[in-house]
Each structure stands twice: as C-alpha cells, then as structure tokens.
Image 1 (tube, rainbow, N blue to C red):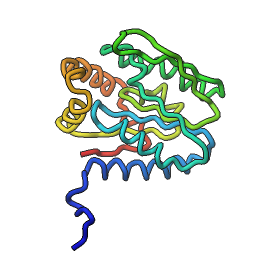
Image 2 (image 1 turned 135 degrees about the vertical axis):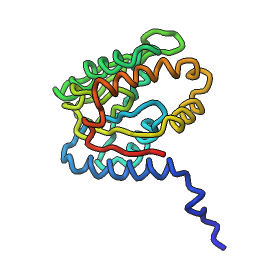
Image 3 (image 1 turned 90 degrees about the horizontal axis):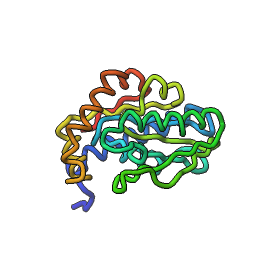
Image 4 (image 1 turned 90 degrees about the vertical axis):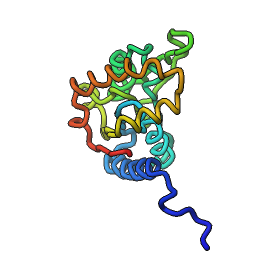
Amino acid sequence: MSSAPSRSSVDPVALSLEAAAARLASAVTEVAASNPVVLLDGRSGAGKTSLARALVARWPLAGRVQLVALDSLYPGWDGLEEGVALALEHILIPHARGLIGVWQRWDWEAVAPAEAHAVDPSLPLIVEGVGILTPATAKLGDVRVWLESPAASRRHRALTRDGDAYRPHWNRWARQEEAHVARHAPTSLATHVFDIP
C-alpha cells in the first residue's frame, strides 16, 4: 500500500495557489524584463500573501525578487485607499522611473509610522494587498492578478490567521474592499484572474 497521500487529502486551496504560482512564473518569464512588476489583489483572506510567497519560492528569473505587502503600509483600519496611494507614490512610480523607492512600515500596535524600507528599481517587485489594482497602478504592473474566493472561505481563513485582532474590524474593512471593487473594477484590470476555493 502506498504511503503517499491520496489526492482527496490534499488541500484544494493549496493546490489552487500552487497552480496559480506556476502560471504566474510563466507570465513573469514572458514579460522578458529583468525587473518586472507583479501586482496581486483580492479581498481579505483570498490567498494573496500565500500566493505571493509561493511565487517568490518559484521565481523564474536569476537573482532575488522584492516583496512588499500592503498590510505593512495601510495606516490603520480605515486606511485601505491611503495605503494604496502610498504604494503608488513611494514604491511603484519610483520603480518605474528607475529611482530607489522608500516607504515606511505602519506599526499597528503603536498606531504610527515605523522604520523605512528601500525598493531597488533594478530588481523585480511583487506588491500584494487589497486595493493594489487601480487604473493608476495597473499602468505600472507587468503582471496583474485578481484572486476571487467565496466570502465564507475568505472570512474563515482571515479570522483563523488574525483572530481577535481582526474580528471587530471585519465589516469595517469589507466596506472599503467593496468600495474599491465598485470604483476600480480590478478584475477588468487584471491580466490573470484565479478562483481560490
């Protein structure tokens, strides 16, 4: 009897994310640039962080890739739109112009900006987070991704991950996500849309 796990015992979310990462690795290669930019959007709990890490692990180009999570930029629970604006101004625009970008991490516990981080324009870049796909940012992204996932699955994953720190703010944050989707139609800006169970 084989000791290998049966296909039915494999997590369907993990399988979907691995398949998406493989497709994105191919898409990055097809860009034919040394410093492509990947933008990865989707509502909370859709799997953005996991997909970004999976893509970093199988990055197809020589050298390293930079990964910035918008969770590190949003200035608090009402800061979705502002976090995206900060990413555009301090990360994406400088990267596109060949300039070093500098962004400040938001300290959620201190409720204040913290240390600064640099982004090297000569290196590839992945920016992941809710709201990152807008008409302004899409112009600067070579590979643009939207993750679609059922609300119940997303909520379960997000609250399992962040627990009581997130639970009181779920609806507050969801309203900002809904505003982003209604205003920017991120699926229409994406080069790739993946369904995550």
